[in-house]
Length: 343
Image (cartoon, rainbow, N blue to C red; front, side, top):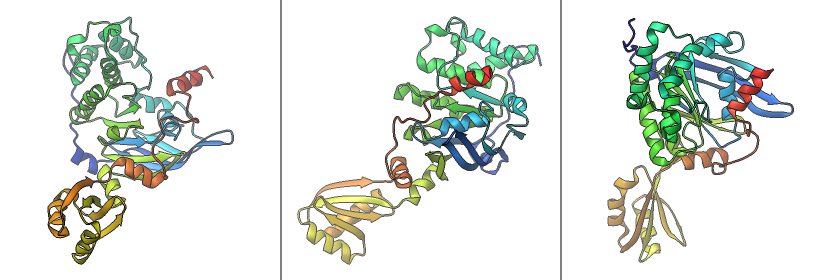
């Protein structure tokens, strides 16, 4: 391929991903540090072209799992295959087929965007005649083509993160691993970065495996594995997880709650009453508001519709809200990788 020609990536979409073969297979994977079990017999599979999220608080085992999948940490037990290769028996083959974005930035801010990418191309032995084309392609995917000659020190945090994603894609990996990819970014920048990631999945056919403790970020995934204390406690699509925990609710405050309860009971609604009003359980909260108001027979002072969220899902499966910080996984992925190279 001549220099300057963009690399062609295989097309892949959400529907196709549902029928695609597995690119990650994990069977009873565990990691122990002395008497402490950081990951305990987790099993799951990720399909080609899928966006798959590990959702959990800090210390839940997310980064420990991703370390093992990326060959940065050796499993205590269990089996893992990534891109068809066993992570213990064929670690170099696995690394050739994955891209990785750490929690902390690993760019050289005294080099330009293009120089950072060229350095990565040398490390991954990208054929010389393909380097220019691949750089042009990945910069276009993350919309940084016009900043290729700028020093990284001049980039915002969001731009630097997008460049790291571009770098991870340069050697055309089958799987892109993102470990807490938007930590420290403001909400607007996080949303823009996710536009890039979803475009990568659609245009580059890359499988995305991410870890996050942000509920809104997990919503971007095709499927979510909720992990807590080293165990997967739930795994499904965001919609299925929310549907599994119950119906929508409509909270009503009326001029006569007792009369409202009696009227709604005669209509066959499932409800609860308390000091704060009447709670009605329905399949579709928004659609039910008008019929409910018509049925109560007394003036309605306040209406509030609530649909299950991932916060509700996490609370349901773990018994508590997601924790922002906790001990147990304080050593960063990058630090562990450096420690592994020293050994």
